[in-house]
Length: 346
Image (cartoon, rainbow, N blue to C red; front, side):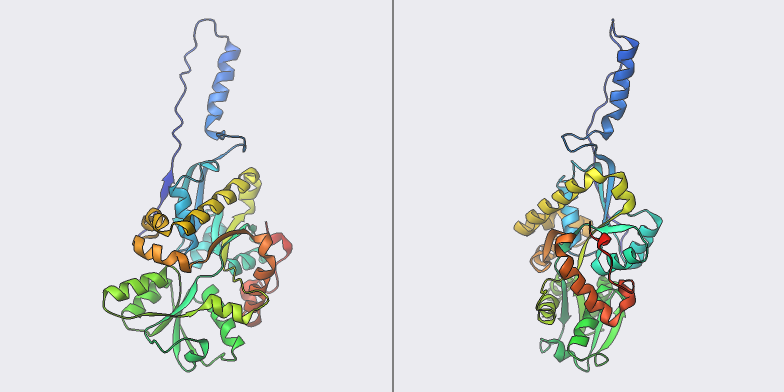
């Protein structure tokens, strides 16, 4: 795919004429110079010092619509003078960015956040930005339940990562482990393209890849079906915790130590963006289409199926741990070998 799209929000602060007038003292000049040099780092309100620059990273999935919208609409002006949004393409790219320090504010799967935290990568899960956006899409209208996949094959993106882990948990719940052949694709877009080309019959995809596949299939005269809503499946698996907190914003310890007073403003801006995205999918899609490199009708169609939220992670600790425990039953190493300690939650 094309290189990362970037949305930028710049400051319009203008310089100050520093030429002294008659009668101005040396102390006055020095004081004025010091104040002027500090201007780029002063916030336009009572929230404290704003960041000079903030880069938000997100996956090619639903929560990134919220990030792109927040940046494009200028909702983060109280957080930083300059804001950028960038997509990470694969979980390996995301992990490398965190390890190198080039990513400090990243939307990621909750399973990945738990794994990285437990393994010593300093980060905290600040919020949850989707309560699940996974669907099984098929060319076969007869597939309507997990049991209908018995003896069939399904393609999943991001090998050994969240989509496959959740699907494996569903298979285990139905006693179907080993009875469905799992084929792998590197990314959701790759799996979508295989589906559209007729190379595979069924795939597990996140939004907006689901809506993109259905949209493109329709324009080509091919029927694709949103066969199984994995969020409903999750609710049936875990009646005590039907919420599937799939992904949220993680902040590194470096970010939190450097900018502790920016966190509240950042989360408030994302909550506002989420509310506006859900209220007006068309406007949100128009704002985010360029950043996600998808047509706005696709994004508009995907938003109602993306379960976008902005809830503090600490308020969803029980549902998060329910998800982690379900994954750990078949893949304990993918959550770091044990349940994360309370320090994971901001």
